[in-house]
Length: 294
Length: 196
Image (cartoon, rainbow over all chains, first blue to last red; front, side, top):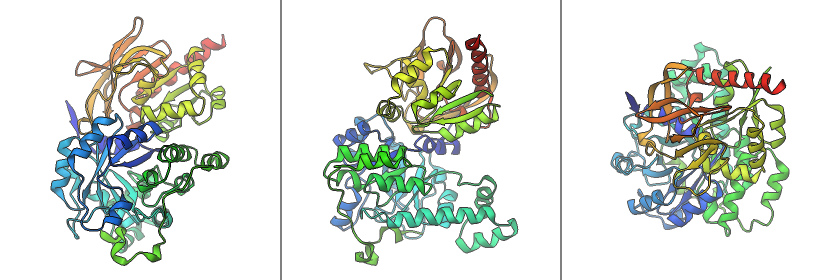
């Protein structure tokens, strides 16, 4: 007797990605570059976030042809994005055998109120979060992995830093809180009480939490690891740089050895130009992908 | 005290550390080759085998790891670690460390949606052992002298060959430490033998 789709199998898959880099790719060629550089998984997309931002309009699940092409090209796990609340996109990706689904604010939400009930799926999900309330609500819905939202496609690390610090700080508060204070705190941040209790007892989130949204350099990746990330997603940062192979390898190494500054210095030499970044204050409220869901 | 290292380049490192400690040994995370001198046995954890291999090469771990195994010190490979240990990998021209006499198949049970949990019996180690298989490999064939310890759906999922131990599942993801304890005992015995 064997059981598929259990919490342990779904969360365990993310545990195996720890200390690694997950890279956005738009075709088989990029997927192979990512695998060769040591990525632990790839995210198959039609466009990287920076291009989604530039293109405007409605961003949807990628053409299944692209996802299939990537799945056939590499032996590492393949992830793909579904719109928030779009149960059919998610089921389609699951039926194709995608290894992980990102219910992602990078795409235009299909539902502005509700997320997918991810517990019902055999395939695991990763979701974005800015704080412990969002993090635990997503876990409550069945997310098996978390990532910071950051601000995708900007090449600016500031929002990912804000979100990682916020989540870590709130976890520390929960741990040091008296149990009789926990229910009110749960109400205030909109978190499921049972999950906060579990975090208090275990001293950590029940799922891994990666950094995402704005990582553009090896030093950015190492910074996020130092702030407590279990690994990093790099979206536009690699294939929008002018030397993707080199950037990909350097980011992988900086993630492994995030406290070896001499090495990160060496890795950062002569890398060429990183992706062009954006300052947050130049973004209109409607351009902020992180505010697309709660 | 017996000291067991966990290769800490990528993957489920923390869980193995916890499991080693729960089994009564001291655990250290090995990120540099010099640390191999400080340990009596080594665990190659689960993660992505291609990623780990790249980092093994990058940080000059390849030969030191082979020498570590050839010196008679025990190595336990779990999931991706099993692939690193194998002498032959189906569909690939070259193995990784090639230390343990067996042929393995990667992602052999399917993609993530086929990942599963099952109760298995591990010969001489544990009955009704809850094993977690994640995009798991299996062992197609073990070489002469190696012992098959467990099967799932007729596929070999755990084996031992002298001081090498390998399993396709993740003993570090549950609170059942019986297989890790078995490895700790292997290390303790090898310490005595290597000392004499």
